[in-house]
Structure formats: C-alpha cells, structure tokens
Length: 186
Image (cartoon, rainbow, N blue to C red; front, top):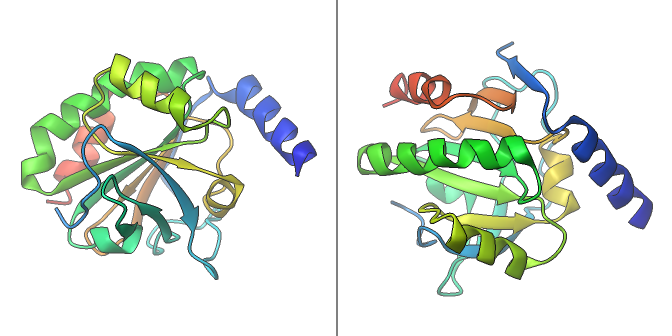
C-alpha cells in the first residue's frame, strides 16, 4: 500500500500539469467544509468508456456527522473536481469553481472538491480557509481514486441530474469549458 501511494504521488507530481480533454440541495455538506469520504462497496471503476455511465458512488460524513453519498445528489448537476493542495494546475482552477458555484448553485449545481491529499484533513482545511473555497470538500483515500481512475490531477467529472458521467476533463481548463458543459444540463 505504501508503494502504491508513492507511485501515485510520483505520477501525480510528474503529470499534474498535463492539459487534456477527453470527450469520447440534497446534500447537507456545508459550502467550504472539509470531510473524509470513502467508496461504497461494489462500485465499478471508471474506464475509457465512461460517458453515459453512472458515476461510482462514494460516501462521506457531512459537517454535522450525517452520512451523505454521491447518489444523494441525483436531481442536481454535479462537478466532481479531483485535486490536491500541492498541485499548481489544481490551484489555478479553484477560482473557476468558486465563481461557478456562486453563479449556478441556485440553479441546481453542486460542486464537490475531492482532495487526494495524503497529509491529513487539516492541510486541506487550512487551504480551503485561506482560499475562501465556497463549495464542500471531501478528502478521499485510494479506493475512491482507483474507482475514478484518477491520474493525473486535476481531473474533473461533470455529472448530469441522473448521476451519469457526461464528460471528464484531465488537466487545467478555463472556467468557460466547465460553464458551457453545465449550461446544457440545466
């Protein structure tokens, strides 16, 4: 497990700045809160044929300690942003997600930041506060990273109201890329 973590960190550091695009409120998690999450057992991994498939479900405890799942977000357009505090392209995208959440949450957009940081939740909490991130954050372990096939970061998934993956973006993207995608889903 330690070797896997080192390999994953090395791969993410090496390739987190790649820029590729692959095109083949029912949650109580408070905006700006940081909690831990894990995959729901039996979920299939995301492969190259991801479009139109239901996103792997994962769970987390919200700020009040209530169990939440990705499945709870059905009926909303969802952006899942896999990122880390140490990743420059991830950090560069955060203002886009802050703006998108401010502009579209009232229309049914939910953004969940999915941190792959392994230094602990306090590192992410401090980063979220310093950067005034207004959307919920879930710190995940290897099971969620594997289920979504994350490498490199940032990797962002757009989910429709049925929980199906509409698109996956790998690497840094401008706000307009995400905005055009979500507007089609409202």
